[in-house]
Length: 154
Image 1 (tube, rainbow, N blue to C red):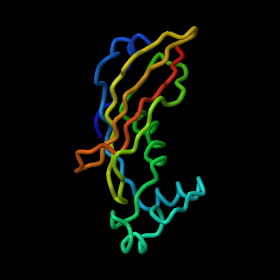
Image 2 (spheres, rainbow, N blue to C red):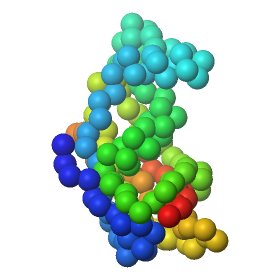
Image 3 (cartoon, rainbow, N blue to C red):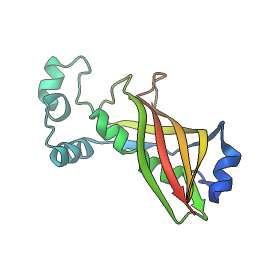
Image 4 (cartoon, rainbow, N blue to C red):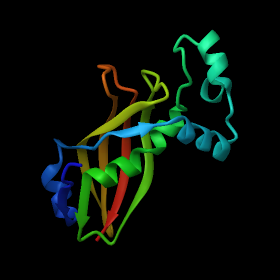
């Protein structure tokens, strides 16, 4: 497990604007994780949960994670890559762009690369616009690219 990048308050985010900031540790995508997400979202499409059918009919030969499962792992991966201090509260404000350029077959390992695009002042804090690139181990094509907005309040 790598050391998390320490960011001190809103000023720490401002100092990192326009820079590559961190890379998370790898996280495994098991069938249990996929099935649990399918149950939580009522999305039981066969490409996610039916291993036998995938072996016969899917171009991937195995089940694949939901795109939204991949995206939903962003907060956990971000939290593992960063250690924020001087921030009372950080909230997910939303996304500007999201794409899923490549599939995530079961038993893949993912990590995220984090760049800070901009840091904009808010009346009581700041909005951090992250460029997020989620990678699958052994594949050069990203599995998710997004602009993620996080609001930070000191």
